[in-house]
Amino acid sequence: MDAHLTETQLDTELAYDGHFLKVQRDKVQLPDGKESTREFIRHPGAVVILPVFDDGSILLERQFRYPHHSVFIEFPAGKIDPQEDPLACAKRELQEETGYTASEWTYVCTIHNAIAYSDEHLDIFLARGLVDGERQLDDGEFLDTFKLDLPEMLEWIRTGKITDVKTIIGAFWLEKILGGQWRP
Image (tube, rainbow, N blue to C red):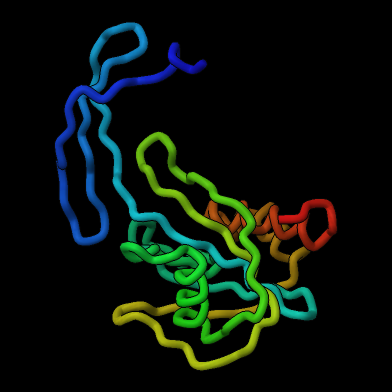
């Protein structure tokens, strides 16, 4: 059905093998028969947690992100370890980064945040029934947590105070879920 759009891998090589990311360089045949090169980042995948308190407020993080040399506001998230179940990863990341655990978990969706240059996917989970506990940040991880209500969060997105794509997508899902329009 999509043969007129599909590219076929002819050759592949690992262009860069880093601790966290790998860069793949593939030689491909285009739909018109010509050849081209595709370079892309290999990423193991990640999870995003939408933590909602019983009063409807949302748990967010402030974290410095080196590539942009800025502090970003974002939902808790983290890389999926090899062979790790995404829900187990979400539970682990929420507890490690925020100290909270949740009694109710719901899968929301999977997003692909950089389809032109990465195979990364993010599995989004809604977490409710939050119970505070002890954070266990990874070595070298520094972040603050805070609560915000959804209308203010949406205003921060509108005004550019929140620009992280996974957080924006998660906020729009939360708006529909909490408003009763969508069921994950």
